[in-house]
Length: 133
Image (cartoon, rainbow, N blue to C red; front, side):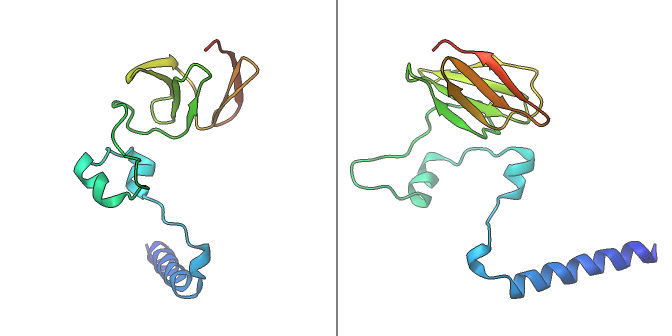
């Protein structure tokens, strides 16, 4: 029990020291809840307050139903591919309709389209799947 308390105190002290002495230029602001549990999209009125875009542009919800979207890729046909590590799926978004494209993956994060192939970066491998836009 004493070792556990000591370890927790040590972690707290090290965390505090990092906060004091780590240059702000190297600080990364990560939303931990959304990273580990999936994030809900913000309401559209809140987006207007939080995000600023140049005149003539707008920010709004494009598609719904993928809580933990990680990586986005636009296909040559104008569709959107979205990786979802928590749901182990790559989704195809066409005309705001969300459909699973590839399922039963191992935490897919990175996705890339090259010469008719969809490459999916998973936890322990990279998969290559024939893709026709």
